[in-house]
Length: 367
Image (cartoon, rainbow, N blue to C red; front, side, top):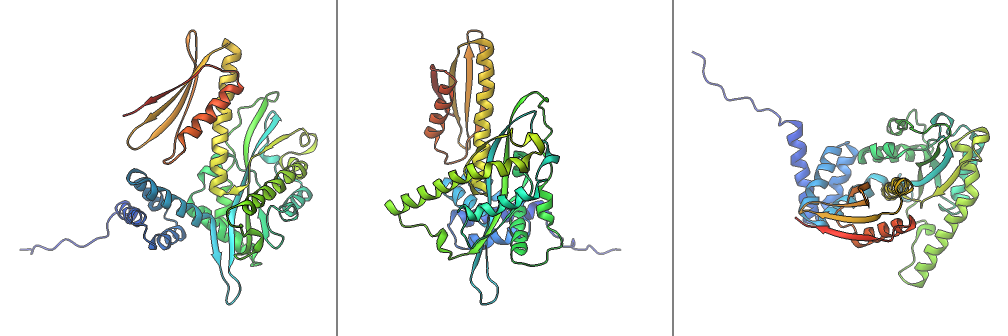
């Protein structure tokens, strides 16, 4: 007769283990534990996006400050890395991006992008010569204009791997390949523009800047007039750069006679996640205005109703365009925890006013 055997001990399913580690990470954020950053970096280096994103969602439903703290930690550590080689100085490398809206006839063609090597080299040099980055910084710019879907597809751990790949290349190491970077260039979403259509498309320039962590160029003065002047000078340099760099970028985005016909509307340079959020928000607003403008052209005057729907765990902002026969158009988007709702509503009011809509009401829907 066979004796009863104790069941063999096995490993818990990967999904259960990830969920447990997400809870641990969320707990560190709730406790403001200094171990949080070490845990975040560890999960980034091991490609554990499920754990990181799971922890963000858990914190989102628990505590606003913990959610912000955790989200900022993941985004900062994904896109910024500190390096030291031997007794050398500490170096910092970060991923930055510039969103821009490209106006063209018929839309951009991905195959035409970054074919002009001379224009690309001059554009790359302009980041330091025009003062967007420090004169001693080393900069690399991906030879690809990302669309929104490509940017959103880059996970925190993939971005972190791209930063390390860029650091290796900028440090003079021989890099056979950069798999994370290559995966990020997934290809644009199919275009719906006809050859004669006036197209407006969102694209992102993505780059990496390596410099000494104590580089005085990046040292922000203390709050006050000096800091205000520092930011004003930085903004002025960027605005000047958008003028001088525009012809170079036109040649990087299109070829032949199509290049000078492009019109570029630059948004602000920021770190990866700041630029992504900026581009996403502006893209939503422009899409809403285009749809509402077309409805107004077709149906005449109308009024707008802005609706804020709040639940215990979520909030969304919606806007309806209403004519005599009912709804003409609508748009809505989810708000992030901690967003300035009043500012979001004011931005919507301003956008609607530019379309000539004067009758605007706001409604609040609570749980």
